[in-house]
Every structure is written in C-alpha cells, then in structure tokens.
Length: 130
Image (cartoon, rainbow, N blue to C red; front, top):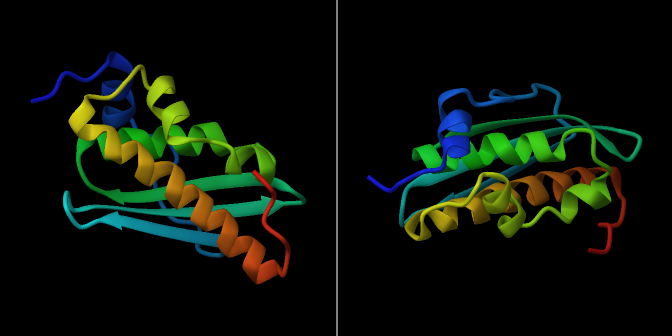
C-alpha cells in the first residue's frame, strides 16, 4: 500500500462535503477507466461565488481524499478563483500523493471545473478566463 500523508488519511477517513445537491446549479462528472475512479461534483452558485460544493466519489482512498480537499478549497470562492484550483494545488494541500496516485488529483480539479462550466453554460455565461 502506498504511503499516504496524515492529511490524506484524515480526508479519506473523515471526508467533507459528501453527497449531492438535488437542485445543483452545475454538475461535473469525470472518470478514469484505467483505475475505475469516478467523481461527480455538484455546485450551488450564489452571485459569482460557490455557496455549496458536494461530491460523490467511487474510487480509492486517494480519490476520496482529493474530492474532499477540492470541495473544501472551492467552497466560498468566486467562480474564477475556483477555476484556478489546479491538480498540483490539491496534491500540495494534501501534503503530497504517491506518484501512482497523482492522477486522482487531476480528476478532482477536473470534475470541479466541469461542474462550474456546466453552471455557466446553463446560465448562458462565459467561462472565466484562467
């Protein structure tokens, strides 16, 4: 088993913001068929801020920890700020990920960005320039 940081273990054992938002303003889903991880992010937007962020993840411990961390990092941010959250930011915030689990951090940020893009498309707005 790869060595995870204490923070990864904490976010895996006690994930934040798990669930779905029934009337979500945007939904983003990504999956990696190679490892079988699937992530769905739900966002609720108030003005230009993410009022709420929830996720449902089917995957390994790292995928769950990443989803939890991304949701925490994004909540309360403006859409533009949330679109700037990168895979590298997520991995750093978690205290690093084993190299063979790095792809999980890609999925988290990608799913969040897709949820925001879904909202913007539904609202007929332009995507913030990142």
